[in-house]
Length: 161
Image (cartoon, rainbow, N blue to C red; front, side, top):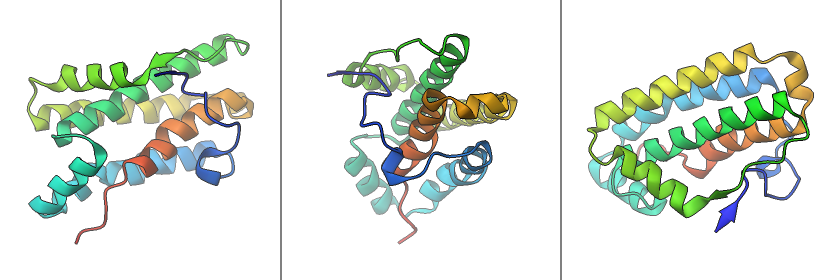
């Protein structure tokens, strides 16, 4: 299956209104900052259930998947800002996800967590540096909403059981 990150119905992500820079940063600095600790607080059985429901055998694989899409989102936004008429890139989602997991295959979970956190901080810095006009660009706002909020909701760690 080949999809563009923006190849979804042209409506706000998960029924939400377009997000502001402040709201995107809040998600990155608060919700995503708690992602790893929240997962690690789950009992082992709940961790295994969550990962199975997400379709991943290791937490490191899920984190690698998320960070890989964040990199794509960041690159896409740079492209939209350089050329507002640029079409979204197309991806074979299954192949992309498989490659993200394969790239993490030989790494320990703590190494992947460090890479995930580095990417999260890079995305925070990137969003902080975006000009106000970027948040008037529908493609930019949609990409950020998909990568930051949509991805969080898609892979949200359940509350401790």
